[in-house]
Image 1 (cartoon, one colour):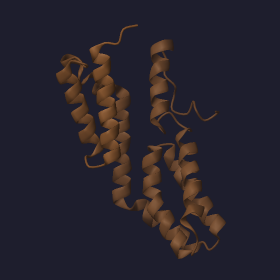
Image 2 (cartoon, one colour; image 1 turned 120 degrees about the vertical axis):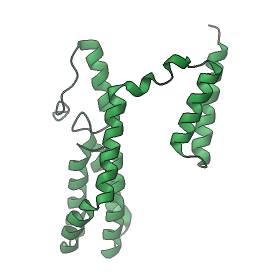
Image 3 (tube, rainbow, N blue to C red; image 1 turned 30 degrees about the vertical axis):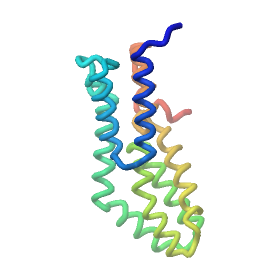
Image 4 (cartoon, rainbow, N blue to C red; image 1 turned 180 degrees about the vertical axis):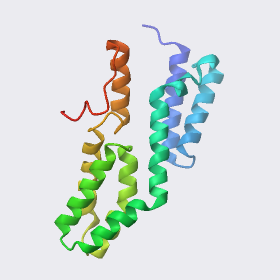
Length: 182
């Protein structure tokens, strides 16, 4: 097999993106936009198809879920609701259980990584108030968000992608709660 110039350019773009992500100077969206621009300019991605991926329903759903996650975080509704409940509970195990249950439930309907980001500051404050190590709270939260994300089709991006592939192959996507049994 012969390696083409476009393959070399594609790998170079990917390596440059990884380096930029690791360096951390530019925002991730700027790096991605620059990579797309370079790929179009080099001909790796045809100009007419540069933005077709944004029309994919999966991308629109993921973007919508991120917007909802940000709105929930900005509203402080969880801080008031869960924070008030946690302030009344003295048992560390019960605090961890409440936080993990809440993040698991919410992760089923909102992007699990975003949900974890919303709950982390609350968990750290609860740990400090209880004079416990934050890791006692954060590790169960991480696992809870992962498990919660697997409950529904919209909980994680891979579930959405798998549903799209299934629709293309079999004609029917997964329904919202088809992942619950697994």
